[in-house]
Amino acid sequence: MKKFLFAIAFFLIANAGFAQDAFKKDVLKFLEMSGVQNSYKKAMEQYTQDIPAEKKAEFNKEFDASLKGLLDKMADLYMTKLTHDDVKAVIKFYESPAGKKVTGVSQSNEFIEKATALGQEWGQGVGEMLQKYMQ
Image 1 (cartoon, rainbow, N blue to C red):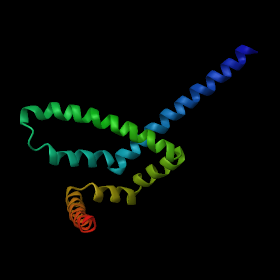
Image 2: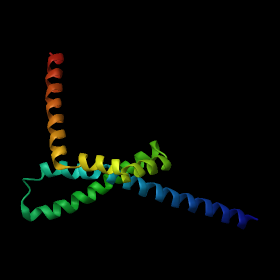
Image 3: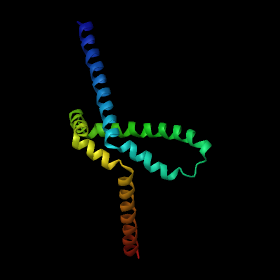
Image 4: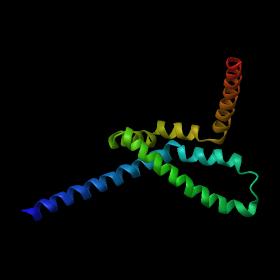
């Protein structure tokens, strides 16, 4: 009887582990499809223009490893706030024609540049507002 219970417990634990792996894989897919990963890469391009050409490949390798670690941690965070079914529904949206259009627009260089400019303009206004209230 003990062997039977042990076998059942082992099966349930292994099954839960596989389910978590599938869940995390889907969350990472969602992060890629949503453009989070691409946004970090595009943002970093602005800061890496001064890196000498002979060092860029090594930097990119290290940056990609660092980004993978960040995305892994973000996936863990999403897994505490969303269910696997939630993530599957979002992926289904991103795979739809409307979802593809949204990601295509939001990940285009033109859109990112304009959104960045809007954010910078807003940030300057907030900075001025802060100064007004800090005096």
